[in-house]
Image (cartoon, rainbow over all chains, first blue to last red; front, side):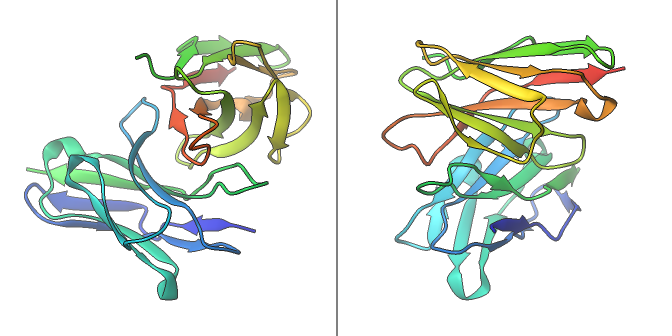
Length: 114
Length: 113
């Protein structure tokens, strides 16, 4: 069964500092991987996705993520955080043929301090 | 180009009642998925509709049912509401080409008292 683990429940970072959010997955095949962001009371916005090819993927809002098959990881990074990046971040795996669902991690809440 | 829309935004019900939530997919999308997001948790897959049929179902009881209409819009129905059904219900749509990417709506916040 597929599963996603986000080890960090809450991260606090200073504005302008770098950010890295961890994501580990368990999946029976080459996964499709996603990072979503959710602002309070809002739906999910796709930040970036990995399907195949280059293991370093660029997304919106200056985010990037690196797929490491050997570590079953897909960590999200941003070099310089802005106050507007305060939100909850979800890593997700799937879907694939005959299993159409996305499986999400529990999320990491990011607080940005001035 | 409108994204995924959901109605209502908020809803308050009492235990034992029934509720219907609605979703209109993004233009050009024909597949709709529903997720339940309890407070402090990641979204959990309820089911997916494609060609007006339930294509896949998650680990939810039969109290949760759905429907997809010919215009691809969808409804989620929950019967005999429990306190534990209080959550944000998210609808996501995807196109036939590029079916592996899902676009989410803003959600419906359901509170069961």
